[in-house]
Amino acid sequence: MSETDVTAAILVIGDEILSGRTKDKNIGYIAEYLTALGVDLREVRVVPDVEEEIVAAINALRARYTYLFTTGGIGPTHDDITADAVAKAFGVSIDHDPRAVAMLQERYTPEELTDARLRMARIPAGADLVENPISKAPGFRVGNTFVMAGVPAIMQAMLDRIAPTLETGARMVVETIEVPGIPEGIYAAALGDIAKAHPGVSIGSYPSFTAGGFRNQIVVRSKDPGAAAEAASAVREALERLRGDGVPA
Amino acid sequence: MSETDVTAAILVIGDEILSGRTKDKNIGYIAEYLTALGVDLREVRVVPDVEEEIVAAINALRARYTYLFTTGGIGPTHDDITADAVAKAFGVSIDHDPRAVAMLQERYTPEELTDARLRMARIPAGADLVENPISKAPGFRVGNTFVMAGVPAIMQAMLDRIAPTLETGARMVVETIEVPGIPEGIYAAALGDIAKAHPGVSIGSYPSFTAGGFRNQIVVRSKDPGAAAEAASAVREALERLRGDGVPA
Image (cartoon, rainbow over the protein chains, first blue to last red):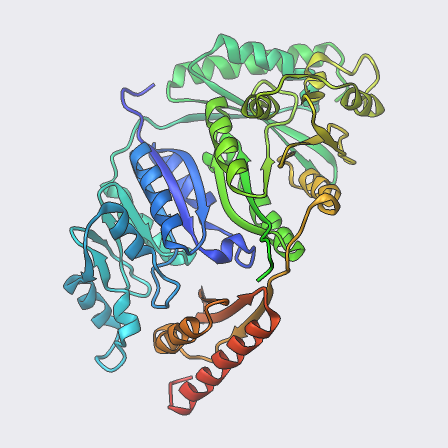
């Protein structure tokens, strides 16, 4: 284990996710991205476009984890209220930020820069901006909270800019073991014993259901590469023993 | 608005979602399903396979919404701890349930019904079972909380069985308006005015970014069909006015 785990939460903001109209594509992307960096994603929440809900979730999550990443609600329309909610959560003022206005001016002529578009330059006091190479309206960071767009292409570009600024912990070493035709209910007992014998290692069993029936994978995860390798060996040996016992393949 | 809104939360349980290894497919499915039934999904959380995290999330969410739906963590392996966490959250005992054992016996011979598989018959006291036509191990309901599998095909089959038992509210009437080439920043002011003038209606603006550039949709939602239709008309008229003003299409 690393001395200090670096942890994170994601807060997805938007009625469209809760109504099912839009299928979120950001949670899985950010999860995989942070894991690769050595940041442990510990919790995700999805809340509607309601200021008090957003403020409460920001304050719960930013207090608990090293970083909080939000997606959604930073566009130009009336339902884009994330920046105001972040300012309220942190107890800071919010106004048009000259740096953000300058970014919008790269894209829009003075006539095009409507009041609505200028809303996208409303940034909480003291924030650092996160560049948006696609549509210019920036994300931002206040304290340990990173505020990103909801549109996946823009969110991904922002995350690329945020990543080099993050403190990271030890990377998780992950070994995925394909199970050769042995059902979960047969290897579960052995797997539980191995998990108990390797306390620094997380061992998961993941069935998926396909046209051809169930397929199982066992995933061994640890920040200690030696411990991960030992546990993975123990899993492979147990599976070989079970095959030797004539478990139907 | 209906007299009593019927609300819901989803709790996704599993390290594999937080590590990004598995991309959740259940949130969007359940969201759309509940919306169609007239149940308002208000919050989603994703937590790891850690009992105290699961218990805390169950208790926070079941107290706040009409229904709570959980996915994941009801298989036969050591990391499947959802049933125990639910029992703990509700302060009830948990043991092998004869009805659940009988269901497993439909699939497994006595020799196949290992202790691990029998774990899937551990059900909190007082629960109703939710049939699983695919792999037999049931989900269950305790109080207002429905516990479902994480494998999407099984979760979906369980949800079909749960749906007829749910109290439902007025269905949301949704009108989606394709925006004819007018950028968000141009129609945002008019849209904000319309939203203010129609307080019982939720109006959202959703850009998506494609190879061809941005495409915007405006979504008008209300439980009052007349109010939704009026607001949608106002939006269409505003967009026509803006086109008449020579906004580049």
